[in-house]
Length: 129
Image 1 (cartoon, rainbow, N blue to C red):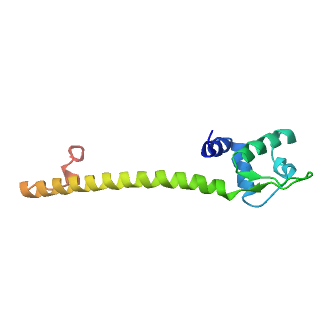
Image 2 (cartoon, rainbow, N blue to C red):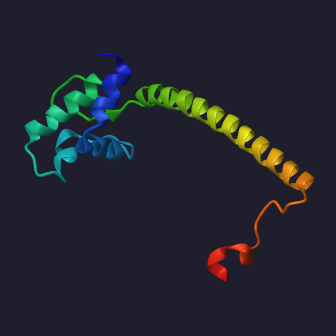
Image 3 (cartoon, rainbow, N blue to C red):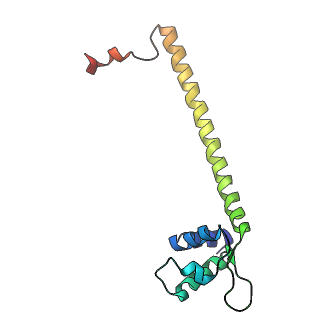
């Protein structure tokens, strides 16, 4: 599995997303991260291992307690991927907007040539009678 896939898979879990959100405020130990959850410290370590394998967090070697640190480069990778696809989608929507604008302009021009109003008045609606 590639790095980006590991990052998205790690963040698919709401507990891990919450841990990442809390770590964005500052480093914390595994015990501090475990406090709001109804799970064992061992379960917290399993979550941290998934986050570490994805490159989202790191823990320096040494004795416990060790601080868990958020790693920004994983977010850079996600940001690059998201922005690439956002830019593609925005270009597609701009092209669609241009086509719709052209169609509206053509309809307005045709209506003008035919002597018709481009939009019906509110009183033109059959339910308003």
